[in-house]
Length: 313
Image: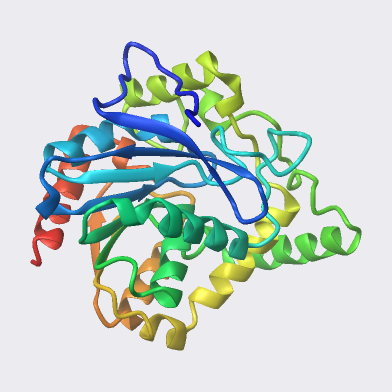
């Protein structure tokens, strides 16, 4: 069944795309987009965004992948974009456990991926990078190479603040407040905040496109995370940061660090690469968290390294 697409003049959908619904293991609806390339030899890039993100935000990236000759498959993660939300308050960014994302990705790989040419390459940002790291560990047969932009392998808190947040999260979970916003959280989407002072990008034009998309379709917007989401994030980060866990991942992996990332801890990325048998770290100096939505000079660093990596360099 065809799924809706949010369009604005400044952000056209790349030609040849198809949007449809995929039914998850528990009946939830997930919005999937696909583009088929005429150049089957290049293979397929499976593209995944981070927390709060939606496919329309990545139309520019999809177009750049298409120009390189790739087929592209992407989807809105459960609980965001136009995929089914987890709670009655649809602005709450919630998940019960990251294993739910694992199962949703498995359904995509079982039901959609076989129609697309190999090699299959993974490309993900932030939270999507955490999910693809889990996939590389549990399903090494899926992706021949993986590229991660500022993956959520550790959160950017001081040790003292981390202890406080973990303690408070534990208390709120004990009080059965999993579905509440984290303390201080609101329904306002990050992309709805003014450009000045934002921690995502230096590029006002790309930021304005994100805002215009949410203005056109408010259902795309997602507010702060819930206590349950934050607990699940801590749990998966603890699991995937263990040296023996990382050492078991043999898939070649290119990880990008944003030099001015205020969300992801840089030391978590360098530590991960130390233990990944085939990991490589590329720093994008001065870039904020969303490297793929950054200024052209930062994005050029990304694409140069991406092209070299996928070519086997």
